[in-house]
Amino acid sequence: MKNLQYVFVPLFVIFIQACGGSSGEPTNNFRGNNQEEDATSVETITASTQDISQQIKSFGNVRAQEIVEVTPQVSNRITKIYADLGDTVQQGDVLAKIYDATYRDQYQQAKSQLEQNRASYVRDSLQFQRQKELHRKDLISSTEFDNAKATFESSKAQLQSAKANLTESRENLANTEITSPVYGVVLSRNISEGDLASNGQVAYEVANLIGLQARVHLPMEEWRDVEIGQEVSFRVSNQSNVSGKGRVTQISPRLDASTGLGEVVISLTETGQSIYQGVLVESNITVKTHNNAVVIPRSALVENVQTLIEPESNTIQLDRSYSVFIVEDDSLALQRDITLGIEQGDKVEIIRGIKAGDEIVTTGQNGLSDSTKVRIADPQNFNPSQKEVPIDNMTEEETKATSQDTSSTS
Image 1: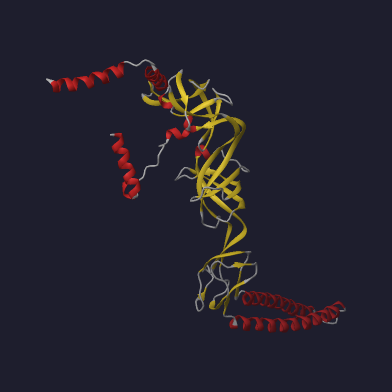
Image 2 (image 1 turned 60 degrees about the vertical axis):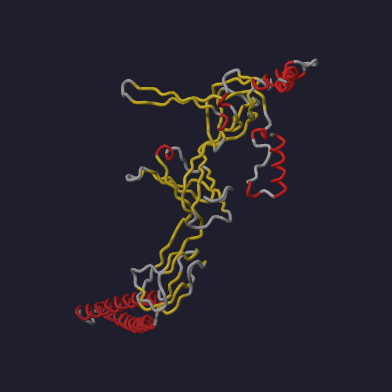
């Protein structure tokens, strides 16, 4: 019986301490906590005005505006290579040499033949002039005059033929040196010393360095919004910063029949260190820009999707509408229906519903309703206050401290 009384007395004392108390302060704290719990913690941002652009994103490879295929004009053995892959060459620089002994002999023969034909032409020309004068004085017959004229015309034709042969042989001799027709960089070399060069073989590919371009292919909805002269920014696919800038210079007048895409050519006007021929870039074509627009983060939007059934076609359509919550007096969240405008990345333009300076809820809005009490919280409150450390990585001192905290809490 004494043991039962010993247990009952402490319990009774604890009950009196919990329910009683002369100051009443524990009771007030309890009510205060309930009042704080009634307000939902949210994060906010102030709507501001700034420029926002509608952009079309696509991917394409950077390439030279012109790629020239260099083919040998004469056929013979390659004796020397002067330019290789990646070399920068000027217009007229020799890329390779073809064996030229045969063509040099042909050129010398053509020169000799020309000299002979020129001498014959001079001789027959003087003879024709004399015969012409004698025929005018009726000192020779018409037959003799006609023969002299025919001889002169034949010498004249042979002289013209000799000139043509000399020009051709000179060109053939010059073509034994394969030269670059443009200022550019060698993209490929398809010949080596000892190979037989032929007219139909591409010996080199040279990219003209007058400029770089990117070709992108867009669906019809985006292709029809593109216009010549629109500004474009480029970003290499594995980088976050803008790598280059350009403008739309050409637009295909038709869509590809097999893919349904339209080709757009963009010429680069500014290139960074990351822009090379062949590199894959993301192109952002600026279609239009609105200045001083009300802009908020897209994360602040509350999307409302309604499913509608079209009776005539018996199809299901989705009706999307958007709203945001604005905070008044730092304590009340009011829902506002909005109309969206241009979207750019994680930013969106608001045409109607809010104005610059409104305090917009960006975190916690999905659990709100109109006229909900809120408490604007420090963004750090949404993150763990203490850094979690895996047990395996904890030091011996940290492990002891954790054990002590656990014991004291218990």
